[in-house]
Amino acid sequence: MDLPKELLIEVFLRLSVKSLVHLKCVCKEWRTIISDSQFTKTHYNRAPPRKKVLFIAPSVLQFLTVDVNTSLDSDSTSAVLQVDLLRFHPHFSIKIMGSCRGFLLLEIYGNLYVWNPSTNYSIKFDSSPPILSTEVGHEFSLMFNGLGYDPCSNEFLVMLIFVNKFDSSNRVQIFSITSNLWKDTKSTYLLSHTHCSISVQNESMGLFFKDAIHWVVFSYDMNCDVLLAYDVVASTFLEIFLPVNMEFDRYELCALRTLGESLSLCAVTQLNQINYLIEIWEMKQYGVQSSWINTISVFVSDPCSGYLMPVCCTQTGLVLVNNVNGMIAKWNEFEQKLERRSYPIVQYEHQMVIYDETVLSI
Image (cartoon, rainbow, N blue to C red; front, top):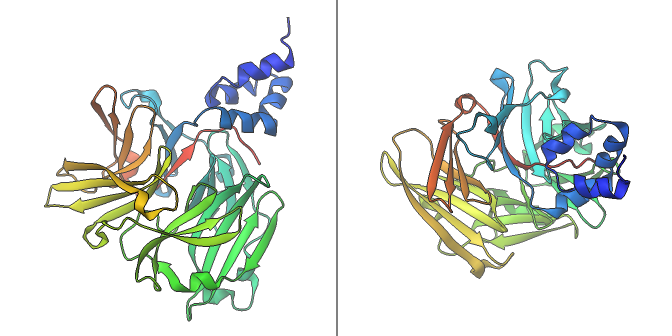
């Protein structure tokens, strides 16, 4: 006996993304239900999405995803992805440029794509940023990039900020994936910002949080490092001040992360050859400098090269990745247990990104 559609939808909404991907292949009716845009949005919003870590190593032609929500001791935690959009690029040049609501913004041989690693769904952009086709296009280089989502218009937006190599002029290129249109503008606000003065992981790639794309930058006007944010709903830039007590000149490495419900800064201080300090600062009230709190300070003793850096949180605790020696560590807060596992792919030249597991499409 066939179940009513309403009951099927309610059952499907309780299933994992992995299960839904398999069920799409069962029959046309189920595929239609699971592919429906309203269903995918409801499924995404019903529960916090699972965070996954993706490593891309072009030299070995491999995409490795790690499900940090499960035990690292299990072989099923990681999987090598078969990527459909690379079928015609056996030797690929790839750059991760943004991550938002389960989608990744990728540049492959100069072409821009949006790709969902969970479903293999992808879109190739039909056109390039307008500035590149102008007579002065060769004078501009890409400084910042990111992917965002406007909940009011239900649009995914690509943000590319180009800066002139010979003066301080800029061009802001915004692409609406939904309407397939580029917007070419200039911003006087950006004239006083450049790359930050500290070592930041993925400094060019913006982090999407609270309807805005964020970068750690240096402000000439303030003579210090700040967060530069682009509000995709209001279409405006703004500055957010970093913690007053952070001493950026002593950090070996910094990273901007979303840990739980907060925008966070993670930093590493080298103490001697084998010891270093990991600190996490969380902004408890968005946009308020005084709300930054130093929530975690952990001493690590490790003779291996590189540093363990926090990348995300799961329901059980904090996940850290050493991008040099391939170590992933997960602290289980409930069991007071530390899990570790090394992944050989990380020992090759690679890129890393955190993404949400979702069945969303555009």
